[in-house]
Length: 89
Image (cartoon, rainbow, N blue to C red; front, side, top):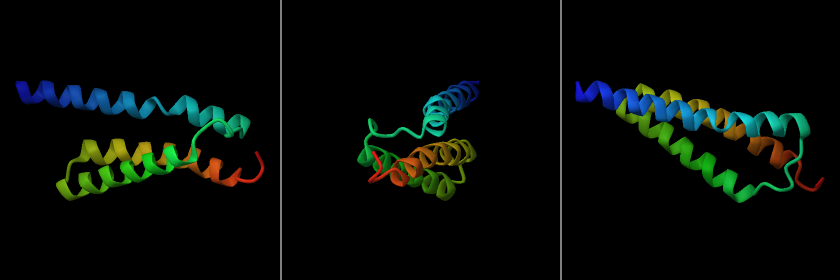
């Protein structure tokens, strides 16, 4: 029973932290405005998420794999727009 609760808590946390990036991605894609976001933060964040994804693959932990794959796509989208805007803002 404790393991089921732990899985539920982990899955809920993964969903919430992944979904937290959706508003930023939507805003970034709509406005293409990235002047006020830090390039180094997004590079470090995406690198960290990519490593969590590798960890999940190595551990065969599907919740970690799915959450971090989705988060990497979302974070990578913001990072790509930020990099694309270099020199323009």
